[in-house]
Amino acid sequence: MDKEQNMKVVILGCSRVGALLATQLISKGDEVSVIDQDPSSFKRLHKEFSGKTISGIGMDEEALKKAGIEKAEAFIAVTNEDNTNLMAAQLVREKFKTPKILLRVYDPKRAQAFKELGLNIICPTIDSAKKIEEFLQEKT
Amino acid sequence: MDKEQNMKVVILGCSRVGALLATQLISKGDEVSVIDQDPSSFKRLHKEFSGKTISGIGMDEEALKKAGIEKAEAFIAVTNEDNTNLMAAQLVREKFKTPKILLRVYDPKRAQAFKELGLNIICPTIDSAKKIEEFLQEKT
Image 1 (cartoon, rainbow over the protein chains, first blue to last red):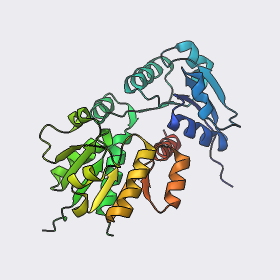
Image 2 (cartoon, rainbow over the protein chains, first blue to last red):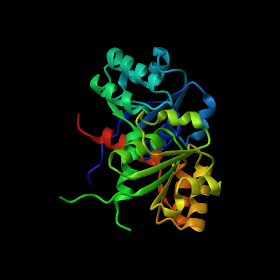
Image 3 (cartoon, helix red, strand yellow):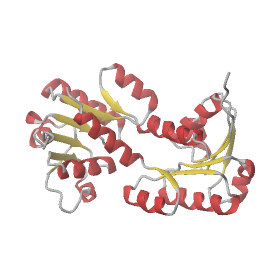
């Protein structure tokens, strides 16, 4: 049987998406650390979450190292602040050269600008508007 | 040439998604009204937005009527509050029988429950987590 390879993933931001992603990755057998400046946000994680949680900010290299960034294959920045995600992603790219980096950007205009910086982004604003337009075009 | 049919669409919530959607639909020639309780949020709309803006809440039948709900083909509830979207969608479904209704739900658990009520939903939390997982699985 083909088994997917497990990954070491550092997630910045225990937002709804961060928590859901962390839970899903853990259930697939990945190694996951979640960093958030507000420890109460770790409550969003599944009760049996077996990954690491680190209180800290994304610009804090010590927090990133505690999260295992030096050996991580991926860094995902999903705090609710576009700028925080951008700064952390750039720091991680330059300092730690993590192979896979992705950040969430809410502002559609910034999404384009960040892409031009060579960053991998998801923009839920654009994605949601697109999905709704598709819904509107479906025949009833 | 095949021309898409234009629609009358009422959007509740001039959130980022609401504003982007409104702008895109207008540019396609649809008839769009946007309702929001905070008139300052209309600033998110494109400067040349030619649709209607109505200050009001989604549970206010008068605001809905001013927005043209009685002749609308679609109602899209994208305030930042899941419960507001749910209540408005249910009101519109029961009172005005608008053919196409969709609401945004952030909470993945509620998304499932709302679907079971027969509602069309988008859940950006689930969609974003899925997209990130796909990104993680891509070969580098």
